Each structure stands twice: as C-alpha cells, then as structure tokens.
Image (cartoon, rainbow, N blue to C red):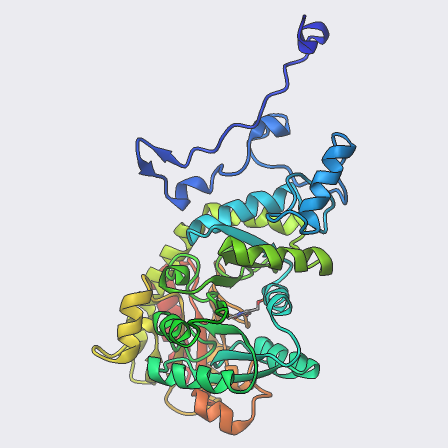
Length: 435
Ligand SMILES: Cc1ncc(COP(=O)(O)O)c(C=O)c1O
C-alpha cells in the first residue's frame, strides 16, 4: 500500500535522530555537545536552533498516550512523563536544557527552575518534614539561611551547622549531635561559601555521613555549586548526591535572566520533579531558550573570566593600597583549604574579595571612581561588577557575625568579566589612585 506521504506529496514524517555522544570510543565533551544535544531539527521544520515553545499545554496523540503521560507526571511510574503534557510540568525548551545541563557534571538527571532560590526551596520541601533536623555548612547564601532558619523553622524543622572548612571529625560530631535531636533528612552544603569563599570538604562530609548511617536510610548530601559550577567543581564526583546551581550566574552568564538547576542521582531527582510539578517552580520557556544559547559559550566565558581574575588578582596583590586579596588561587600552600582545593576544584573562579587599606571611606572612593567595572551586586556575568558587601548585600547581618565572616567595611567584592584584562587593570589602577 502506498505510504500516506506518497499520496499527499508531503515529506515522510521523520523519527528523531539519536544523539551522538561518542565517536570511535571518544566521549564527546560538553563544550561540543552544547551545540545540538537533545534537539533534532527534523522535529521543528529543520530549524537549526530550537524554537521557543510558547504554549501552556500539549495535544496528546490519543487518550491512552494521555493516560501514560499522567502516570509519569503523578509519580505512578518513576522518571516523569514520557511525553509533553502541560507547561507547569515540562516543555521542549526545558527538556533540552536539562539534557545539556546534566552533561557538565556527569549527572544521571537534571531539573531546571525559575530561580536558584526556587530550586533550593523545591529541594528542601521534597526531603524535609516537621521535626527533622537539617545539617548544613556555614555560612550559606543569605536567602538560603532565611529559608532554612526562619521559614522551615515555622514548620518545626531545626538545623545544626558546621563551619565550611571543618574537618571530618568536626563534621561527624555535628551530624551525631543532630541525630540525637531528630531525623536528619538532609545534609546541605555550599562551597565555596558566599561571601567567605571557604571551601567545604565534600569527601569528608560523605565519609562522615556514611560512617554514621550504616543501618538507617542515609540522608542525601546536596551542595550549592553556584560559585565554581559547572566547570571548575564537580561535587557529584566527591560524594554529593545533588548539585544545586543558580543558573542566573555562570550558566546564564549575561546578567539578563534568573533561573536555577538541580542535577544528580535519578532516584533523588524523581521526587524533586514531583514537588516541582505540584508547586510549579519550573523555568519558563524563554529563559530556558536563553540558557541554551548561553551554554554554547559557557566554557569560553568561564575560561576567559578565570584567566582575567588571575591576572587582576596578581595586580591587586602587589598594590600598596591593598591590604589583602581573598582569592582561591592564593590559598596558603600546605593549608587545609589548599588541600580541599587541590582535591575538589579545577579552577579558582572569577569572584574574589579585595581588602583595601582603610575602611568604608576608602572602599566607597574606590567603587565610585570605577569607569569600566559596574557598581552592582550579583556576579559572574560577562561584565565586571564590584560592590561593598558590608554596606549592601550583608547590611542587615549583625556586626558580630559580619566580623566572624570577615565582612569588614574595607571589603570590596569583585566579579571579573570577559573584558580585556589590561583594560580592567587600567581601570582598577586609576580607581586606586583616587583612594
Ligand atoms: C551561592 C548562591 N546560591 C543561590 C543563589 C540564589 O540564586 P537566584 O538569585 O538565582 O535565586 C545565589 C544568588 O546570588 C547565590 O550566590
């Protein structure tokens, strides 16, 4: 019998092409796969790039397909929906983005969210119940601390923390104490910590957790990998189960969108997906599309910004008006932080702390004199940003805690972009001259 396409003259419907992940046993790198992985142009009129799918719902092939999809959406079958259903659950742009995001950290599965904070909130709501204790490293991003301490606290959840640089014995002590207070349902880390840049020993945390939870169910280890992820730190390789990222930062990279991601073990991603389906914290199609575009240049941008930061920090370190530079590339040889860095990180990042000689007056004079670097919070976009945490992002932090975290009035936080490094040095040099 004639194919329908022969009768109508239409091109036969083509099946999606399988993704090519390796050539002659060579596993292709994420930088290569960002240009096409997870998208078949044949499904979108041959369009080289994925269109933005602005629709709130999708048409089912037949009623049985609709039922099968809902079995996935509601969790009757693990792994999510096999097809597209409704844009609060999934969509083509988000699915392509999630396929690509997971590649950077060799993750089994990935989810994307409307912001870094909605990713963190969805993760916490998935695993934590009233009466539970969360063990976390400190400090955490301020909104995460508020969410755990003040908001989940309203629902009977408590927390115990250990300092970011803690040893295995210290971490084990805190987890054991937490266990005596209630069910430990989650171990939540942030490394490097915001704003101290202190690194957490993820291997030590995993060893401590495994030693203390032999018979019982082990609490998952989730880590905020925003500062060095996804290029310079792969915490899943060191014992974390879930890696969280504010995609607003490196992944988006142009300071023009807000989004978040969680990547990791499929068995843990599945319940987070169920929670996301319920509360609707998925990325919107437009931001997902912008992130696909951004991911094509992720390695280029991060590499250039990392090189720029190294050059700029070397300039600051020798300047007479600078007291010190808090940069992961300058960790003291033989120190515990340097040891964690060597085991966990492949790059020092592009955000660092500059301590000027003086106080707020000197910091403000420097910031006000900058001509290229913009005076703004946020970080790791293409452009260089500078701010004074004590007077801005951390203004409401009590003085004693500020002092403990090293957030002094002479601190300027700098996020270096992809501009010409010598132009940036010329700008910083003239700004220091006004101090
Ligand atoms: C370490 C860290 N985690 C989480 C977030 C929250 O991300 P978002 O602003 O995308 O919600 C931020 C934001 O700056 C951050 O720096």
